[in-house]
Image 1 (cartoon, rainbow, N blue to C red):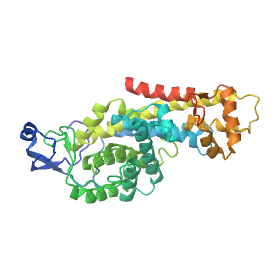
Image 2: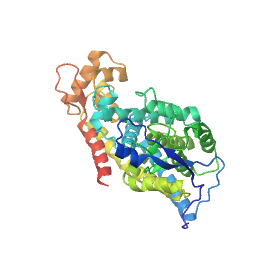
Image 3: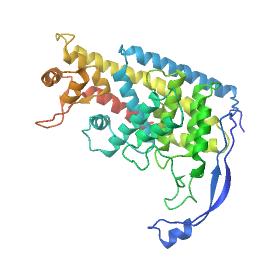
Length: 399
């Protein structure tokens, strides 16, 4: 192993026979896909000793410090007591990036519409469910047990009741053919082993002797290796990372866009998972350390860009009472840059007419625009905030 490797138990394999049962499989497919395949045995990590080389430890330490600085900056920059609007949009940005890794993409407007129940775009709805999974991860961060992991998955696949919050009951594999595991890049262990492997993972998560970023990276890789669910393993595993970072206090209130860092080089991310299964956790630890540094640095700029939009929107309301509903609505636009009268009513506890007048004022002052084209049930949006979010996502794709 090279000097920056971190030894972990490599997967061991046993050979099994596969017989295609897929009803659409042709004779040619059956001839190709029937036959032996290798199924892994996953080792315990509950008491795993992790020896970090100096270079890896230094990288982790730098990333941890940058994440902490980002958390403090994001919390103070907007000057919002509960940080709710900023927290919401950072969380949604992270959810969109995590979903994008799975080839699920949606623009900021469609995601915001989906949050209101106003979008018919399937991908936007998937991103929103991923956001709910991450919310569950953060909510349950202080008690990371088996039930918490299942709850994250249940939130993610809320529209799939047969799968949501339940372990798989059959073989799964990554890559290769849909007809069988023989050409897969990774095959999950037997489903009978999942409860004990997750129990082992939970014990690992409760350790206090590891740097949190190392613990998060290894826990993520272990969950991906176990592949306990029929679908949603990657997104659940990345939500788990944020639960570890929240529990540790490194990122106590904001959500750093770590998946955005992973999205910049998904090939290296997936390769690092392969190397973990081969017995080296160094690459996955460094992958998450690098992604965390990117998250912290790009997150600072994202916070500044969003803050500029808030300042400009407030300035556009010059001459209007500071306690007016229009002023009170401005911070909410960070977290929900597309809104309806009903949303503003509920958010600010306003009568319908007062909410409508506030939106009218925001439209008159150029803060909001009506792009719905409807006579009734209108939807209003903040073009500046949407542009900031879409520009951030486009920058990731260019990377």
